[in-house]
Length: 67
Image (tube, rainbow, N blue to C red):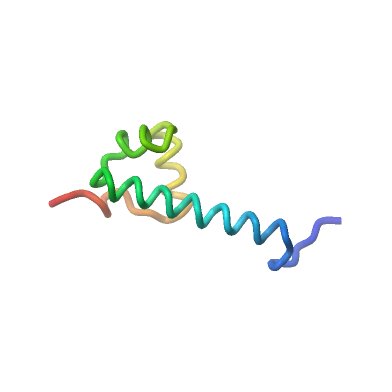
C-alpha cells in the first residue's frame, strides 16, 4: 500500500533531490550566461535532457541570456 502522506520519507527525499537538481541547473545556466550546450556539458548531460529538466522545473530558456 503506497504512502500518499506528503511528509513521508520518500516524498521528502524526492522533494529535496528535485530542489537540489533545480539549484544545480540554475547555477550552471547563470555560469554560462544561458548557453544551454555549455551548461549541459558542465552538468554532464545533453542539451535535450537539460531542456526537459528546465521545463519540469519551470525555468524559462531566455532568463539567463546576456543582452
